[in-house]
Image (tube, rainbow, N blue to C red; front, side):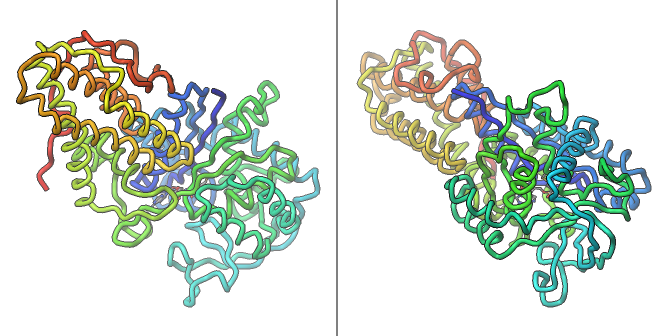
Length: 502
Ligand code: MSP
């Protein structure tokens, strides 16, 4: 038990929320719910990134002011997360006063430390990335390696953050904190960037007004990445003399996509070192969800709206798919057929079917009242293995592993029923014993599936007649064998996951 602070990237408001945004946000939500079950005092932060050239251009194209534009799109993210059952504690927008205060404070500290200096920048810039590139980083035809589109030439007087001074300090820090970046192969990518040599980066602009003015030179606004990264501190009170950000900071995990490793694992820790702020405890780097082999992005035109998918497979069907189908860290391939296949196999045939058959047999053979489980049930070991596997999986920020272990118990319980065929037996002690075991397994399954499919898990909990809110349960007590008391009315209800014709 302790405190746990986890963040998602803040999403650019130049596009409506898409599957890629939903993916990272659902992973954060599942992790949050797992840590709440552990009894941790969790802060889950997400939000929107609203400054910079990209947003200014999107607002211009829409014929509105940037502020109006942001005010229109940011709520679309909030609504999408509500619809997806995201239990974030805070939603930060970089146009908020609390964020401005934090950015000014961080900039000033780095400036006072002598790590921000005036210089002239001349080079290539990708507006979609809001990132500078050298010629050798661009594709052969001079296009941005991420967006495959032309870059702009920029030349202006900027303040620079002296990142080049931080190479040794960063390498030493990562050497002293092994495992800070998960999964490990993503840590190697970050270290590769640092070892490859660090270029100073510009932290201000004079050619743009849509940003936060530098505290010591109001002709310049802060570069959007310096501004954006600071959100993680703004939300916990940094820059506000009335608050103590160290109550929450350092963050336990920044969840990020592999596209923003450089900013989060190189720029950000160097900025924090310069400012004398403690470094994050961890980063969990996810891959991309690809559609037809391409990263989903507005500029690629292959955007999948998560809310359309929810109409087909339900909120939990969608959440389960993104958590279970892709190993966090690696790229995943999104396909509609894959979504439906997983839904039918794991949710309709396995979890949904288990609930339905247990309730049906209890209705027919036990007068609808659940028998108590046996202490020496053959399912007790399967339950312990599922708890151990789920714990290891969530601990490593590997939802697919955690769910694989959880589904092990669902499969074992279905197999237990099939081996004993209580539906064929006469009512009596033997049927009671088998059904008591199955009910207890389902109770544990409700707790273990709560992070991934909270709505469904709560329904299972209620149908079993368990009292108290499911999300008030605490691990390990709530998942130790024997918690189902017996004697409750078991409710059959509608199918949890009606099969979808494929
Ligand atoms: N605003 C910056 C982040 C600033 S954080 C201080 C940004 N925003 S973004 O909206 O373009 O994307 C942010 C994140 O969304 C990615 O890093 C990734 O976590 C997630 N994804 C966006 N597209 C994705 C996929 N196609 N697949 C998986 N995740 C993706 O970058």
